[in-house]
Length: 360
Image 1 (tube, rainbow, N blue to C red):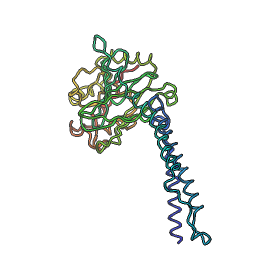
Image 2: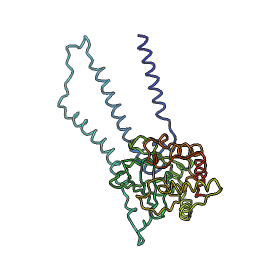
Image 3: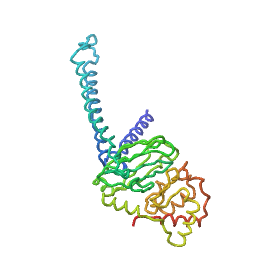
Image 4: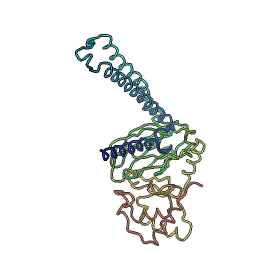
């Protein structure tokens, strides 16, 4: 008996801990702190549907308790049959109409939001030069296990870091270059699948006030099981004002081929040009066709905060990644594509990569 009670106590403790921990999370990675119009509408629908379900549960529970208590069998009324209500038209109308009304309350905003969030008409309006007229369009390409972001009208390509303006609709074309992935920025909008056989289109809006609360930084994830390193397929989202975004765009467009500073970095540049340049680009205005872009663009590598999307950005972790990519991200496509480097070569390549900076 004591052992059973002890087990139940443990179960109760774990249940309480699970309930408490389910409310923990970081605001830049939580659907419960919406940071844009899309996320807010999805959050409102979640609250509405949950409220309806809770209301139904409460009503049904109250009726259940009342019936069990009121018509329980006792010695006094064990032979008494309660009044039968089968075929009562009033009751049948009530329990038919009420669910219909509840469904309408949920269906009307759901349908309205669905059509609104699916409206990508502005991204299809082109000017004479073939550029999008009044909308920012970003092409997202998912790969095993990294992300590429192409700004087609601005002729800019970045990897792992998505840069967007606040308080403006940003339109996305998303697809995959290999298996099915899913693009998801939890605090800003629901997930959208990236398929190898076609594109999905949608829009998001990043609220400036919400972005300021998290220091203009959100994180995105892959929300579709895609392989052994699915959990490590993250990317960073940087938000900025429209003026700052315009300045960032001009800065990225004017970037020229980087020049290595120092003898060690120059030695690393030689290694990069011999072993890495076939897959990686080192300028954001990469003009190679999509099929040739088989690895992340490293133009802004020195400005990043993560290595391989998951490790803290420092020389030690960069060397750890270069020594054995498979150990950090199992199943990644970099494994086995270049010869093992000596420690001196690792030092040189690390110095060069850390110096790849665009922003002043």
